[in-house]
Amino acid sequence: MADNDLSQLHAACNDAHARYRQARASLAKAVDKAPDHEAVSEIVDSIQELGLNATLDRLKTRDPKVAEAVTQLVEAADALDLAVASRENAFQAKEPNRERAYVDDGREFTLDLDAGTSTYLDDPDHPIKVAIEKMDRLPYDHQVLRATELDDGDDEDDGRKKSRRR
Image (cartoon, rainbow, N blue to C red; front, side):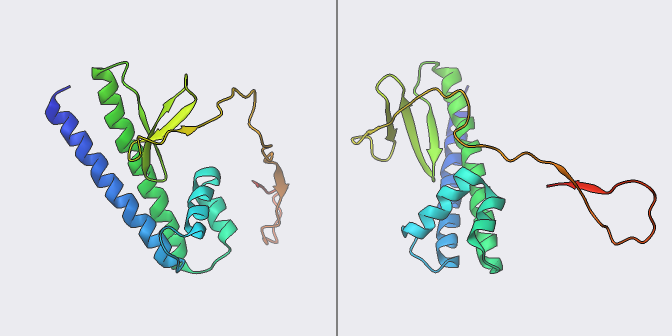
């Protein structure tokens, strides 16, 4: 891969980082908190763990600004993940043994599985000890989707049951 291509991928990552920071700041403004406030971090954690719809449901707000800010943050996080993954794929094609970077709440980090550490690239002197374990299944149960009968309000019955997934 040409150095020019890597420069473009790096520039795309910088742009995606800037959009993520802006989206996070917009979320903080929408919930009337400082960007580094614990409530904003809790929303980000919820987005990462549960996803957009579950987070919006958990917030129990009717404020469209909050819903829009959460949606924009999810989109910015997705764009950042893709930009970093594209750059890292290009780097690894060039250097297969290079340590790969990942993204967490807009910050890039590397994992050293042998040492059991995670290191943020913006704070390389402070690796964080992590416990890595193989799991046979996820630590939580999934709800099974089942068809349920619905009354669609139509007086005519064509003999078929109406159902939808929950």
